[in-house]
Length: 258
Image (cartoon, rainbow, N blue to C red; front, top):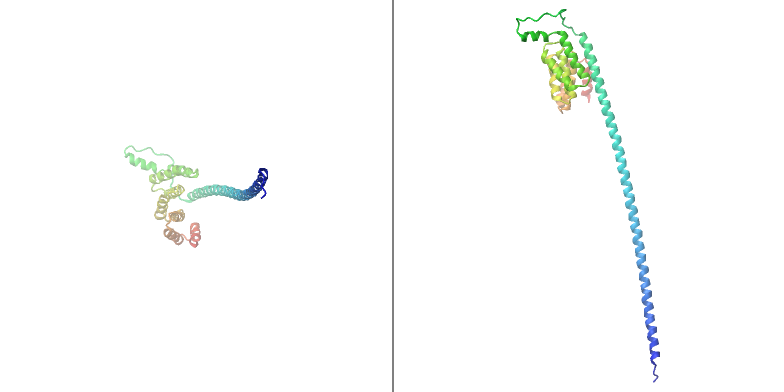
C-alpha cells in the first residue's frame, strides 16, 4: 500500500476548493448581468411611460389654451352683440321720439290764452290747481321733460315723470302718449308686468290714437317674454284685425308666420 504524504493530500483539496470558488464566482457574474438587464428594461419602460404622460400633459395644455381662446372669442362676441343691441335700442328710441314729435304736430292743440289770468281768490285752491294743470303750455313742457329723460336713457326718472304727467293730466291729448312711453320705459327696465298695464291701457282706452297699434305690438312682446305664448298670439291677431294697414300690423303678420 502506497502512503501519501501530508503535502500530497493538501494539494487536491486546494484544487477542489478553487474549482468550487470559480463556479460560484461565475454564477455571481451571471446573476449581475441578469439584474442589469432587468434594470435596463425597467428604465426603458419607465421612460416610455414618462414620454406618454408628457405627451398627454402637452395635449391637455393645448386643449385648455384652445378653450381659453374660444372663451375669449365668445366673450368678445357677446360684448359686441351687447353693444350693438344697446345701439339699436338707442336708435329705436330716437326714432320713436322723433315720430312722437311729428305726430304731435299733426294733433289739434287747444289754444292757450294770450295773457295769463290772475287767480280767482274766491275759488278754492283745488280748482285753481286744476286750471293750472290744464294749461297746454305747461303740459307740453312737462311732457317734453319726461321725453327728454327717456331720450337720455334715464329710464327710472322717465317712468316716474310720465306716470306723474298721466296722473296730473288725465284728460290731456298727450296722456295716451305718456302711457305709451311709460310702458316702453318699464319694458326697458325689464318690468314686463307694468309695461303690459300701460300698453293695454293705451290700446283699450284710446283705440283711435296713433300709438294704439304700436302699444298692442309692444304688449305682445311683453307677453312673449313672460312665456304667455297664447296671449301674445291673440294680441297679434287682434292688432292685424283692428289696424290692418299699420306698420305694426305688418310686423305682427311676420311674427305670426314664425
